[in-house]
Amino acid sequence: MATLFTVPITSTGGSIVCTNPTTNQGQEQQNIYVLTFTSPKDNRLTPTFIDALILALDIIEHRYPKGVVVTTSGIAKFYSNGLDLELATSTEGFLDKWLWRLFRRFLTYPMPTVCLLNGHAFAGGFMLAMYHDYRIQNPDKGFLCVNELEFGVPLQTPMMSIFREKLTPTTFRNVVLEARRFGGKDSLQAGIVDAIGGFDEVAGLIRDRKLLNKAATGIYGTMKEEMYARVLTGLDDHEGNLAWREKVEDKNGELRGMGLKDVEEWEKSTKAKL
Image 1 (cartoon, rainbow, N blue to C red):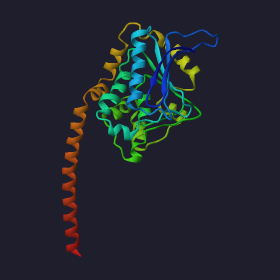
Image 2 (image 1 turned 180 degrees about the vertical axis):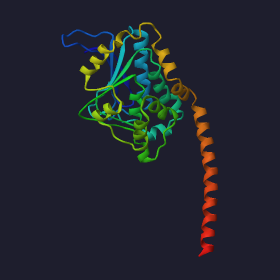
Image 3 (image 1 turned 30 degrees about the horizontal axis):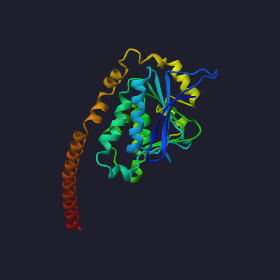
Image 4 (image 1 turned 90 degrees about the vertical axis):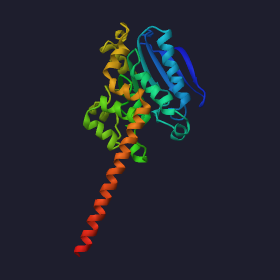
């Protein structure tokens, strides 16, 4: 593969390398841009990682011909292990200034995007994959999983909405309320990924769906904005999402109080009859 540029990830000593792949005949596929990120130990979505990835996308958009962007990991075990929760919670504005910005960039990117899932993608890593247009997963290793249920971290609107938009209701339920782990074959059957395999399958998907020409008219990103308007609204209205959650919690508290009062009255009436 021919290297086009490298963006450092300063916090981990890692990098994002952009390359053009080569065909089996040794020819460069110049309008396919492969972004391979390597940020030890498991490609966590930290502010410096996100800044580097967005910069790489910006460089492709503003300095190279339109084509297709493919993301994958240089770490064999992980595509991405999601957020560093301690860092995310201690960084002011992490969600709207970094994570939502990253998700928005992929959702509205003006070229087709393909996620090559070489290994595990958990939580935020799985969400990042869903914000791509297409996904191909390793058939033999690695799981996709949203496991926040298991350690008690509720999903916020932009985390939830992309699954609601792109998955069937049954798969959406299994992803969120069961924290189910999906291997490659299960992901394909559930409609989470478009194919299983490696870069040969990525090249085949790009060829068969004629993706190299899709961005030529300049409206590819606009079409995606209209397709995913509800998701985009959630990404752009962080304060509104928080206000809605607060309103829901207030209502929940009111209903719980009423329910507890009814239970206490029932208990009193039951004891009186004994």
